[in-house]
Image 1 (cartoon, rainbow, N blue to C red):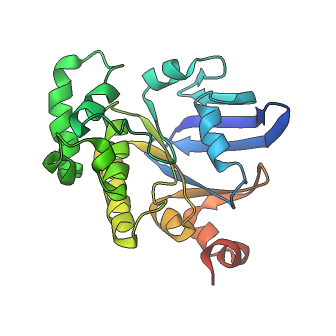
Image 2 (image 1 turned 120 degrees about the vertical axis):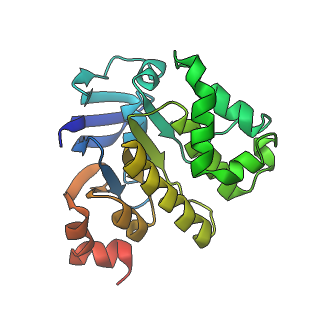
Length: 237
């Protein structure tokens, strides 16, 4: 498969503090890639850098297009959907309003209702709560809403930051199962940042390990999963 996203020599900065050092990776069209690493390794910063939310240097190309000087809203219009840590839903709006706002960049307005129904096939629980304020949903339902909002963009690429954070294990399993379905049925590529390395490696087909802002290991997920250092550091056995 051809590379959908290519990152080369990526550096990122918060003020004068450098956070990423010559990070490079690829995401294949239709593939799922995961970034592993301890807290502070630079995983979230990498997602923000792709969306031009932090100061960067280096090359980020999506379908051959240079993202470096694009505004974040222009990057969204390329159908790159960012699901941030903490979900980022509009808590005072209803589920329906959150989903419709997410489609504001789309030109095919007539298809939005059809896509709402399609999203509800993945998240039937949200359909049951369609007129409920987002802030009154459970943590798991809010995470489902965050992913559903991203789907309303009809994304080519989803950037997912810690989708399991703070959720009960059974809810996490359900959300990861839905993410697998979205990838297989919609052909949506994914870049996943996830503290639960075992879950991430089971879902992804390729993995990169970050340490202090540098890629220190990469390869097919099965190979990374069987690496002794990864097992000891991230998988606990």
